[in-house]
Image (cartoon, rainbow, N blue to C red):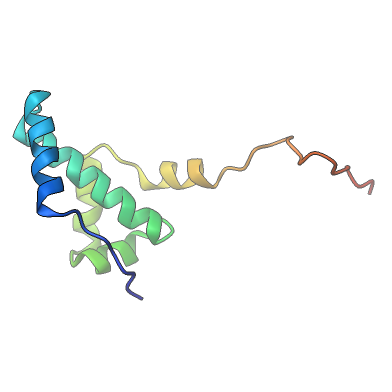
Length: 99
């Protein structure tokens, strides 16, 4: 199941690199942030399934897990945080149903 992606144009990438240079962002930090963003988007799109994400990325599941650790990302925590619903908030006009 492949989704259609829109990729930034060469000009957009050039502008981003120039902005990063003006902000004095070092190469290693730029690469680290790109990896984080890339992996988070893939994981979110695949409902935080690391096995599927590794397959899509073309890497082994253990390599993905190691990379996430190196980037200080915990997919389980992120998954739980994203799935957590607001407690005690009901849409206006809805009433609690007595049991």
